[in-house]
Structure formats: C-alpha cells, structure tokens
Length: 523
Image 1 (cartoon, rainbow, N blue to C red):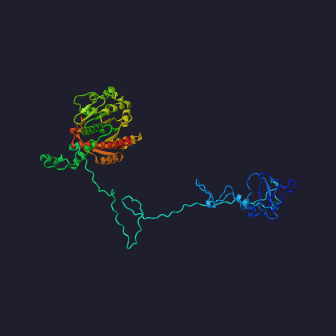
Image 2 (cartoon, rainbow, N blue to C red):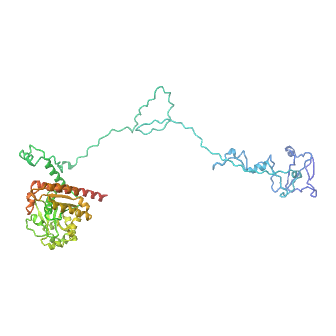
Image 3 (spheres, rainbow, N blue to C red):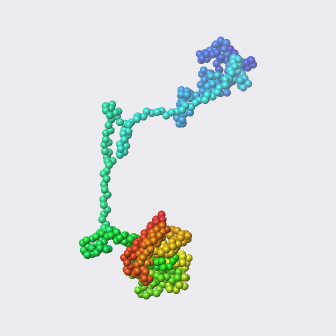
C-alpha cells in the first residue's frame, strides 16, 4: 500500500505487509474520514489511505447514509390493487432486518472474510443488536358512513306507495298540521260493488216443480177434506197436523239409496207378529217407493208367509224351487221377468212375496251358503228386501240373515213374555258382536187384542226406547188379527198410517247409515 497526496495511488508491493494485490476490475473504496467532496475530486486528506480489492460482484459496498434497498423505492411504490392491501400504503415497511442492518452495519468477521480488512476497520467492533420483528396491527377497515337524507314517507291507505322522491323542505308550521286527503290514483279507485247478474233461464224452469211443499196442498182428511171436495176447490182448508205428519212420512219413504238395502225382522217367540210386520212393511215401502220390494220368508221350517199374502193365480212355486234353478239367475243375462214365476205379486201394495216351502225337510237344507246365493240374486232385481226370520236364533239361515242385515226390526206385542223375548234377542245380538245392529234397531209394538194393558205398555215403551233407536206403535186391526191374507187397502186408516210411519222411520235410519257409508267410500 502506498500513500500519496495528489497523484493516484499505485498498486502496492505484493511482498509488503498489509498490502493486497489488486484484482482486475477492482473499485477504489473511500477511506475512513473521506468526505463527499474529496471523493468526487479524487483528493485524499492527509494521513488517509486507499485500499481496494476485487469484489465478487460489481456493486459497491453500501454506506449507511447513502444505501437504499434495491427492491424498495418509497417514492415510487404503488400498492397492488388487484388484491386487498395487507397494510396501508402510508404505513408500508420493508423487511425490518434490512433497515436495521443498514442503520447498524455489523463488523465483518475475519474468519469469514475472503480478503483482509483494513486496520482502521478492524479496530472498530460493532455489537450486532438483537432485533425483534415488529408486529404490525392490521387496522380495522370501517365502511365510511355516507350521510343519508331521512325523508318522511307519507302513507296512502288503500293505494300503492308512490315513487320515492325527496320532498322539499317544509315551511315553518304556523298552526297544527293537518293531513290533506290523498288524491285518487288512476287505476286504483275503489270500484262500487256490482251485483251478479241472475243466471240465464233454463228449459227446466218451464217444468212443474218436482216436489210441492206438504203444507201447500189443501186438506183431504176429515171435515176439512169434505169442505174442499164439496166446494169444488173454492174453499181450501189447510191440512191437520196428523195429515201433515203422514205426508212427511210418505216423503221420507221415497228417499233413495246408493245400493240395495236389507231389513231383517227378528223375534224368537212365535206368534209375536213377525209375518204381519214383514207384509205391512213391504206394502208400505212398495206402495210409496214404486215397487222393487220383496218380502222373503226365511223360516228354517215351514213359515206362514204363504198363507198371509194374496195368491190370485194360485201359484205354487217357493224359495226351494228358486234355489233349484238359481244357476240360471246367476248368469249375466238373467232377467227380472224370468223371476216372476217364483214370487207372488201383491198388486195393491206393489211388492212381491217369496214364500217358504211346505216341506220342512227342504227348508232345513237352506243353510248359510244357500242363503247368501239367494240374497245375492235378489239384490240384482230388488231395491229393498224385507226378510221374515224363524224362531231358532242358532240356525245357519237365521245367522246368515242377521249378518246380511242393514237394519234390524224387533217386534213385540203388548205382553210381558213377548217383550221379554224381544229384549233377549237384543242381548243375543250384542253378545255375538252385533252391538251396532242392536243399538240401531227399530222396535215395533203392535196390539194383538182390542184392549191394551196400559201398565204393560208403559213399561215396554220406555224400555225399548232406551235400548233401540226408535219405537213405533201399531194399533189393533182386524185385518191383521183374522189370520188370513192381509190386504193393504183393507187396513184401517189409522193402522195404515202407523205402518207408513214405521216404514219412514226405517228408511230414515237406513238413509243416515247410507250417507255415512257413502262418505267413507268417497274419502
């Protein structure tokens, strides 16, 4: 190493102590104590020296006052707007270690130095401070609160909200504010109620009403009816309550059903009025329902229906004959006219009678299966079936009849033993899982004698009213008591009306059950 004042220094002798042979392309580093002006002018102050070496890279060793990071330019830094900033631009900091190293340069380690360090530099020792990375707290960004004008929204009852526009500043109120009525909006004015026009006339309007109210017809009974007929209709007295009740019963009998109905008459005791009840119920139903009613004698031995109905043509066929030819009526092409030779028509009452056979042995052969086949065929040709049962509740055909019943009719006379038997059969139905049939049964009490024991009647009527659905009473009639064929037209008016009322009661019970069953099938 050589010292000079005005001339550039020459390379030092390689053999001299402390000298380093310069490498090609080496740069002269300013000596310790040089100023910026002396460095630029090339002059060296007294007592100073220069040293040089070949650096591995052409860059100069930075000084704390003049060093700037290569990749960081504070003036030209622009944050990346493609992604959210991690830190605000005004608080951006480079690597804290790089700043710390620039401010506090560490003395190079001689063991790791590739080239000797100048003696003056070796005399300075810097203790590398321990730097901790500053934990920058990320500021919480808050959405700037934009000032929003609060405008009063005026409500318009009954109309849609108009377009939102800021109203002008209201003047200073001089008096109590009053709300002005809302002007009518086009297209939203309330429309006055327009009554619906009447329906267009139909051809059916020209026809006579199907049913006239029962109170509109003039009286036909008693002195009211005689006045009406004698005056030729000029005077039309109103019907009495009794006549109106019979008219109501006739109307109820005409109620239609959704399927064929079966009414079964039961009473274990003989001579209690089962057969007269079967005939009179069939007559009342057939006379006011337009026919298609059959009375069937299902006695397990020899019944008496054959002797209590009229037989104008002396017909001898019975249910046993029908059972023998039943296969012909189970065909799809069977006709109701082919059945007429097996039944006995009752022209005045509009019903047919299917009587039992005179041979008890033949009737004993009709069991449950035979009853079901006969019942199925009769349902194809009749709308209502009234079954007269025998006295043996354990016989198969009696059980089959009760199982096919839509309505049970319990009969009794005004006698204690007959009433006891009728009440017992209700217990039998309840004990054989037929409690519903027993509760919905209709009781018919008929007088077998011209005189009736009122004490017995007062006991029987409330008893069966509590056990069954309804109780109907039939007065004494000689047409029923003589034991011969019963003719509907020969019954006394009171007796005939009583049977009409009984038939209407049964039909009403069937109608209620039919409506309930029909609703269940449709649901």
